[in-house]
Length: 351
Image (cartoon, rainbow, N blue to C red):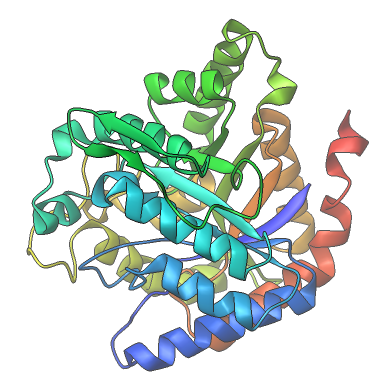
């Protein structure tokens, strides 16, 4: 199993943009030192819970200060890009990272982003499908043309450069709808799930549907590589103390994800957004259904149970949880020291 982490690069009161970017860079370098396989970066616009709107620029930079660790987008919202520009960005970053890019894509779920860029959110899924079709043609390196509903590419267009990885970097798709999972299965892509958009139980049902879609596409469930990301916090403290430590930060995070800090003071995410929005946020429910919080033995037991149900190839951890940088770094270190060795061969042990 691959061990990964994900960060939105959150911006909290009392910090500066420069500070949180520098802290994120430090976390990436420390993740490589600790032996993590990949760091994934979210892309958001007009928000506070994540201030990484230019995800490929940032990955291009951290590629230059790391050597081994893979770097992924979680996710690039395809409808907000011109596909040709996205094809160029992906290829460039794949080259400068020496083939370490993991391309996570999605149709997007935040109303404020679509409103800010004046893109019709109700057509986002169709725009995703058309955009990916153009990407695939662009990465061949040969001349092509395309006439679609949303984009026209003149005949004879050649996109340069092309990705270092052939035919392109691994494509991961964030999906919570049956239609998207069926498309992912047919295309041979990889599925991304997260407890920020679905609980563990809901992800289990999605995994079952994904397996059925794989079989229908002439593949096997073992072919369906997947990623699941969820918050994790390792502590030997009593649960009451953990709750006192985490609840304020998580409440802030829920507010930031749902409404706070956007360009419009209204609900920012659509119905496919956070599974526990601010008005319903409850720490105990969040801990039970969406997070892994507790001592080492408890965390190992819960992760093992989740893997049996979801069979993810990349276990991706959200360590920050709205916590200060030093607490995030300590959380990463605990995971690498006490859990990573036991989880590396979890698939083999349980098969």
